[in-house]
Length: 175
Image (cartoon, rainbow, N blue to C red; front, side, top):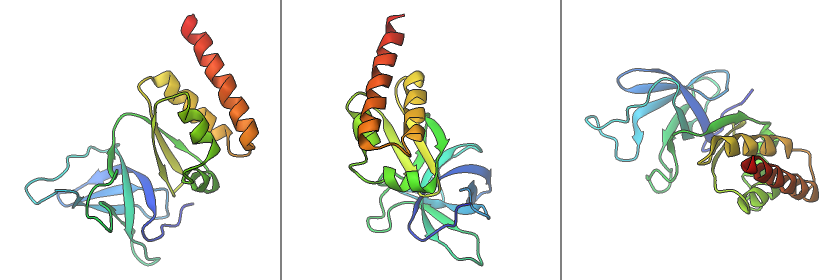
């Protein structure tokens, strides 16, 4: 179970909403609160309209064992969105916290290898959730499986796996 820590980036699912807050499932013991004003450019008159079930990429702004965690969809340093906010389309997978930490490394072998062959977007949450989006749903599923399968592989094994997946997806295109 995820234990929220200050300034960690997380992916959450909106499970309830009121006029001023969204309640967000981040995989911790308590759901988190996300103020409707905790978005870039949000005002009392101009609030984001997120539906229940929507996914958000957010930063933990309050983490205390005695209180519900609080989230923000703005950077602590710039006050801008910087990639935070609603995650539209795409596919959410759950991974180990260790795999998520390794995916945050800019030189991680799996994302580097996949990036050589596929155009995609990812958001990695420190709460064991990874969001993947491509233009084609079959590629999204292919990338999701590749990322999950990469956890215990060496860099060489990852390159080989991606090579085989690319060949397989090209063969599927020909059918």
